[in-house]
Image (cartoon, rainbow, N blue to C red):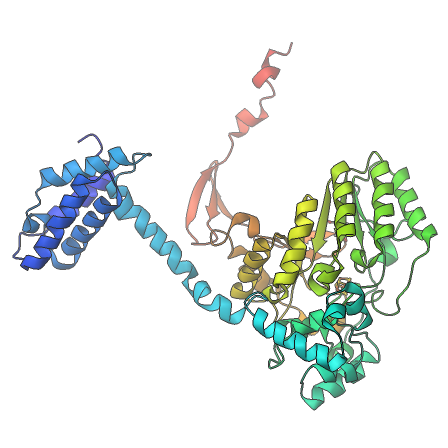
Length: 517
Ligand SMILES: *Cc1c(COP(=O)(O)O)cnc(C)c1O
Ligand code: SF4
């Protein structure tokens, strides 16, 4: 009787509440056969299987195990055997009455996701065949050879920047093209042929299309543009700084693809500018003279637009500064133009990472942006740096549902990228007000991830408003004496959580300090 815990006692109570009944011979023989296997093998599964069946009979038809010639003695022996075999002495009652139910309940939480995820948010890997068809169509339309297509130079040389070229590669309603023509007089459009191949041509709600092809709202939305933060947060040339220990060098205003939701739209994509060496020198000089600076983000635009030689030089200059101990590079190029990730660049990252950690921060907003090609680029980068992190932007129609955002987080994690932030789409620019999502929706999406997907695939939800401000809803819902009441985001179950004893906490004479004279 040594292993009969409360769960197993409860199980026996239910089993033997039933009556002895006549059962069909075949069923009886089946159960006896199961019992023989369960008692002869040193395995737990046959025991669990037998008890589950007996439980079903007891619950559904009020049939006791006696009906199969199995008395209490026999089953107690079997229950004891289960707990003895199990490495952690888990009882058959705990497993059958509790654990399996808990797993089933958990499964039911994510059933809708499992059913819908590949339909509503297919990855570029799942769509690869169709992307390859798109690629062939675009190559023909723009007269690009396979060799040229596969190089970065070929991608940049053949960027799609005007509505007529776009019309040759993509079917859209005539009205849409007129709209794009109107908008592109003011705002730039630029798609690499590769990025354009990710657009599914038969869908007007395509999550890649929304991000790269500007629509009429960009000029029609009313509202006042609030000047970019740089105006009042740039203490030195190229530098943006909100924080004492982290700052950014805006190393270029160019990107391989211009996003319709770019929060730097005031600077980015207007006119390509090559910055002077003196500008970088002044920025690094500012960092050198400011000993508080620990972490430097080389951003843009897109940091990987810079030539390898310049990236190498900037990293080397930063590595020479003792108080700079961390570096980050911000880039969407592995998503928009993965052909850029050459061995020379990987070696540069590796060499600098060897001295002090390098992280690459990227922006992936839909799993459709993860293809076998971008995944390989991320894999290669991740082998050479400390981490590859994703900063997604929450965008209407792109990733504003649980299914889409969970899938994004899972797919990028499988592509060697860790979800880091979800940015709320900026309030500063009326140009993309039509892509904004209410904070409540964002909170619901992020909070719903806890308990349902891997913890390290869950990003933090952030508003940028003079620094990055977390938007998560708090899970502390009450206080009772010295307990706080926590709510589990995945089940809304409230749990009492004893807080640290305040008196003990305030006692400075603890641990070794208590010996202090
Ligand atoms: C995003 C950003 C940072 C970095 O913020 P983290 O929370 O450390 O990722 C630093 N400076 C500026 C100006 C930024 O925009
Ligand atoms: S990659 Fe970044 S900087 Fe470039 S257009 Fe997109 S959001 Fe703007």
